[in-house]
Image (tube, rainbow, N blue to C red; front, side, top):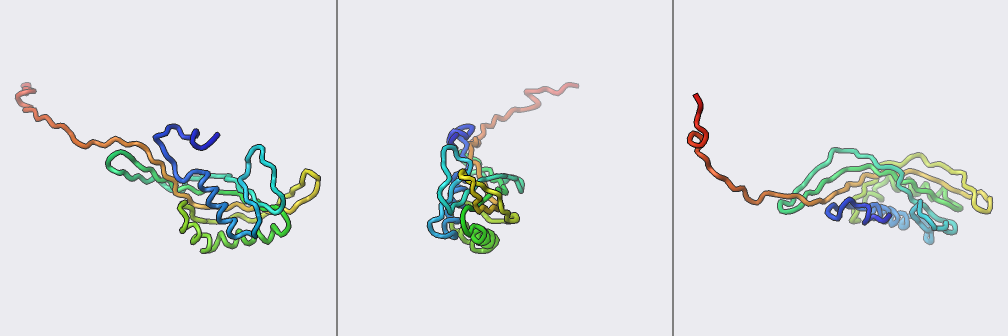
Amino acid sequence: MDESSSNATDHYVISPTESEIYTAIRAWLLEILPSGMRVIQGQQNRQAAPRDPFAVMTIIGRERIATNGWTYDGTSTRTVTEQVRITMQISLFGPASSNQMQLVTALWRDMQAVDYFRNQSVPVCPLTTSTTRQLGFITGERQYEDCWSVDLSMQVNLTVTMPQQFATSIPVTLIEVDTTYRPTE
């Protein structure tokens, strides 16, 4: 299912989309990992794993971390902002993936990642990482391959823009209460 058909209606617009989040994280990984390393989104059908070395990104969790906020443009829309903690698993495959994972976790916890995302158009703010772990990975040729994984936690301020009706004028009719509704005794 593509993201455009996942919206309940064309009148509701979410930003950033999941695709935009993946694109932002991928760009950061490509900047810090060695040249020539492929970075792909996980859980994609009919997509063969690239040759070593490569990285796989998979969103594995979303958690609301604050009460929603609202803004109004006063003419036709309301914007709901929801602060969400998104957890993305990053898996690195190939020789030296342990060292490359150390680079990912060190920079995610550093101002380098904060500054990088501050300069992007996607509102992503790095929070924490899990402990890195080595996964047992056996190739189709029944060979062990290096695979290191970590969960990156980030705050994303999601906005939903929707139509909102506003009153531009209110008709007022004055009624003489005592005349119209005579008091009963």
